[in-house]
Amino acid sequence: MVTSAHEGSHRIFQERPEILAPVFGVLGIPLSEKATVDAVVSDVTETKSLERRVDTVLRIGPSDGDDFLLAVEAQGRRDEKKASSWAYYVAHLQTKYELPVLLLVVCQDRTTAKWAVGPFDCGTAAGPRSGRTPWSSDRTNCR
Image 1 (cartoon, helix red, strand yellow):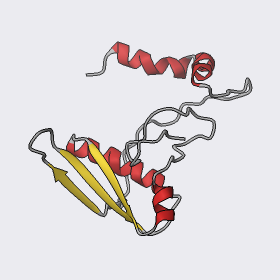
Image 2 (cartoon, rainbow, N blue to C red; image 1 turned 135 degrees about the vertical axis):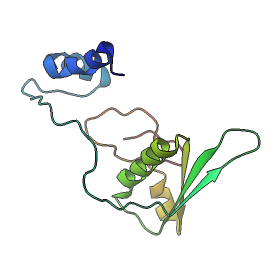
Image 3 (spheres, rainbow, N blue to C red; image 1 turned 30 degrees about the horizontal axis):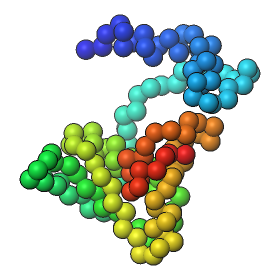
């Protein structure tokens, strides 16, 4: 159930966007005084069929711990679109199965393997530089 505290925690940014300046300051994101802030539709439901497939997904049930999913991707070469695909795969599998997800990227050569370790751009060039990427094999920072 949606609560007033929940609604207030995010709607305040729609109704008083000027409070984003100190928030961005804490995050180290420059925000121009001329910046505009506009609310957009927040529904992220996909209305068209979109095929996305992980090469292999295995449910691992270790005898000494909790189950988790292992998503295995075979990567033959550098592909700049993979960072967002891998993030999508991990988020989707976590949501669908409610289990932790480990992404294993198997590469055919050392150059591709070095690239696949990351870090990867997770969005804005001026964005925060902290946080872990769950899809990166060495858990490098997202940037």
